[in-house]
Amino acid sequence: MNQDFTHMTKDGYLLGFDVGSSSVKASILDIETGSAIESAHSPAVEMRIISKNRNWAEQDPETWWKNLCLASKAVLRKSGVNLNFIKAIGISYQMHGLVIVDENQKVLRPSIIWCDSRASEIGQKAFSEIGQQKSLENYLNSPGNFTASKLKWVKENETELYKKIHKMMLPGDFIAMKMTGEISTTFTGLSEGILWDYKENGLANSLLNHFEISDTLIPDSKESFADHGKLTASGADELGLPKGIPITYKAGDQPNNAFSLNVLHPGEAATTAGTSGVIYGVSDKPVYDKKSRVNTFVHVNHENDNPSYGVLICINGTGILYRWIKQNLIRDETFGYDQMNNLALQTPIGADGLRIMPFGNGAERILENRNPGAKIVDLHFNRHDTGHLLRAALEGIVFSMNYGFSIMKEMNMDPGTIRAGRANLFLSPLFREAFANSTETVLELYNTDGSEGAARGAGLGAGIFSGEQETFSGLQKIETIEPDPEKAKIYRETYENWLELLL
Figure 1: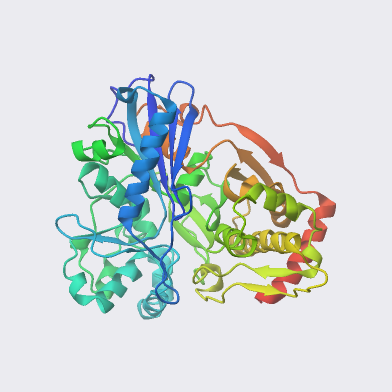
Figure 2: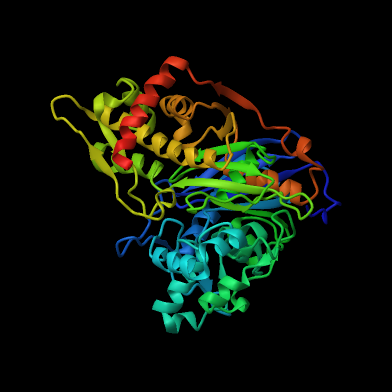
């Protein structure tokens, strides 16, 4: 881990940003106490995902930057901190997205984001042509629907635009560029784009050669905890900050979520359920699933002599399903998520036979990149009401995550405890109960989220925190949910009934 900022003191604050596909959140962390003192997010209503064609999902990177600047100014205003005492900045971002810029750092097209499925066939073809065994041994994954395959899609379908590309980036790299004027990426970032060769311990040149993509398009890479540049005058002005503050941490949202929960060692695991749902376990071995339904990436604390890998299952359609129901079926702005959760709690486990498949947000990796779409099954007009629908949605999300978890177990990844931040769907008591009893693991809930994790990462990257104990001094466990044998049995039976739809 980079320790180039040893002049830093324990007085002051750290600023963390979490750039999601729904919103951007900013948090300020007090260095001395290790606790968040204020947070803000933008926009108030979720950012739109543009889908011009089936399986497409795009967002304008400048929209991320605009909302990040608004969130920054809001959190600074609300906190009232002395801006000269902000010592470092950390960035967490939605994984797998493709951002391309010209030599003037101008964005050439909307970002092809994580849930866009257009490149699935390109990745699957490469998986076959390169050879499944070589792909899995070298990249630990199929090229699949990841960033490298998306860049190949641009090369094949937008030829003239492709010729203008100076650099390709991940969403967090773009945000750092807007702050610093510099373009770089990280080792974990390369791995999430399937641009990392684990055997060669470097750039996946064999895949780039197969796709006929020049390695000059790939930015230089660094550790996650490193000097990623300093705020320029223009970047600082847009953020409402003094220039010169260093950016000392950068990571994708799922490795960062694990980091924010102090999930750094083999056998530990984290989960989150925002727009998508993830279970993320840590291994010291480069494991892989033979069908690439579960994906392995370089974890944020990976070192050559102390390897650390993040093993991830992802469900694209989790929180976005719940949001869709709110926006399109409930259609009452005064009826919030807390009320939805309370209504769902009034119905029994199993929602009286109503089943929902949440796969409506692009091709699902756990389904070998199939895109079956969402389904509502066994709806009865005389028995089911809104509460049943909401419960079936939450249970369907949990069951899909549990199915992915079963694949992780086949890879000998079977943590007895999983940690989550008190955010998104884990704010719901029903969701927490269903998760613990369906996975039959202990669920630990902590007072953190992605933006706080990014702030802690900035402190570690700047050398302000000397190690794990200082970094996580303000992290507190606020609830433990243990499986209940009787409920677990009912959830198991309900899950097996749901599983019939999937298989």
